[in-house]
Image (cartoon, rainbow, N blue to C red; front, top):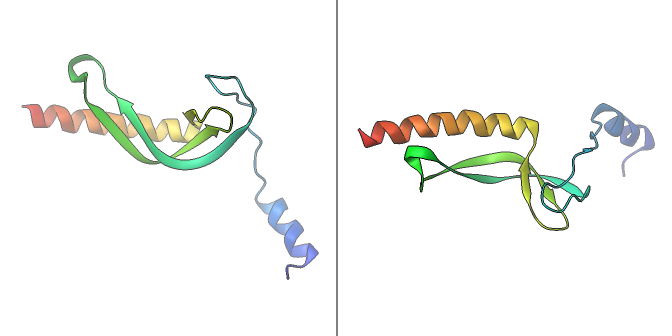
Length: 93
């Protein structure tokens, strides 16, 4: 059994920040943080192709299921898409 001091220490050491964000589709404030694969469809010359970014930190809307990357997840998506575009363009040469 966990003692009260250990339980309080766990919550005080690792506070979970509440996300004031809202869903982009249904504007619900009920979001759940999860790790998932985030598909990014490409545009321009690479239209029709897709880069799958694995293990991205996302907020999933509990009402409609819409996936939105967190700020940290969005940074990872940008980095991975940049490398993915470069790899696809190299393979087309």
